[in-house]
Length: 246
Image (cartoon, rainbow, N blue to C red; front, side, top):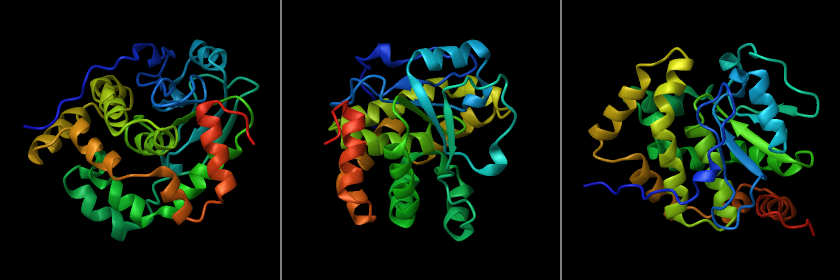
């Protein structure tokens, strides 16, 4: 029997941004400050009301983790005062790495996280540096569904903020209930069921698999080994926890 995700005590973290389906504030997990970082599915689907809600929440930077060929046209103009930074995380051009993961949907689960972290430290380092260097205000980071690339960045930020492995895994698992509307909006409705089947075939669950990863991950140590300066790691942690930069 696989481990089940506990109920999320931080239901206020779920944010309603019209056009998106999988948005939540990382605040309240560990020492993570509300408003510092928000994880989301693709924000190009946001309506004008959705963008207004993001701006009202304090978001001033959007970090887009998607590949260039995933980007489409915004449903509504992005408001003045929100800067978009595009920094693909996948390294999808490395076909030798990705091909084995595409055979059975493991790429859509945390089963590929540790191999990814080991293979692409420079890409994770660049993402951390971009988050630390963002303009003052909240940062919303997203991929397409707000689950895997977004989940990997959340793992990093929550580790730096002192969240427990159980908190990190529970946060990841919250996305699964939101995949049907997300994939429907992306025109890929069948993928929600395919992911459920992938977990069953490996006798695991989103919570159980993410818990394994989180128990063996130290964000600060990982970034140091990836060559990120200690001052940058400290700045990113300070931003996540709402502490003044020293």
